[in-house]
Image 1 (cartoon, one colour):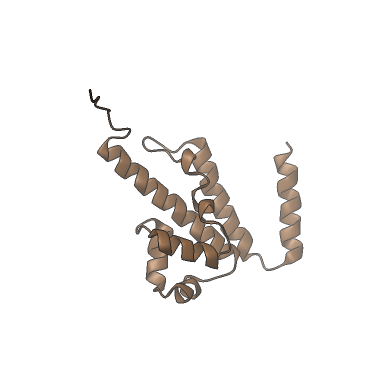
Image 2 (tube, helix red, strand yellow):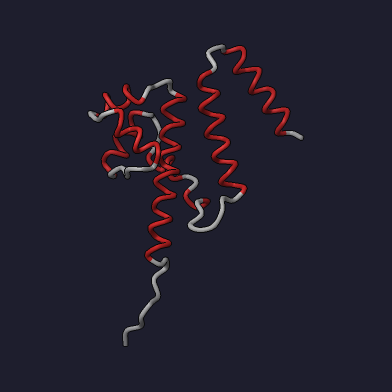
Length: 135
């Protein structure tokens, strides 16, 4: 006798979850690219893409194929799974959680940190962040 199982996610929830994952992967792509000091144009050139396509990936507007994700992970010197490390934290419905907001803040901070040219200033910021985290 066969039993019918309810789907784990409704179609609308699955679509929303996929969009959130695309945005998460895109934000991680942007953060890593910026940390390495690469422009969208440079990364696009290495991948054989246009900078507009990299922009769409980073904005979560386009989904990367598995082979493209592997290629980009190699170029950015991260493992493929790194893009998905926080997927369990992605919300499928409702407002952003505190954890998700912290991730957005961390991504923004990483982008700003990558723009600091002075090694001395980066070290000072790291010391300051260490002090703040201990409170």
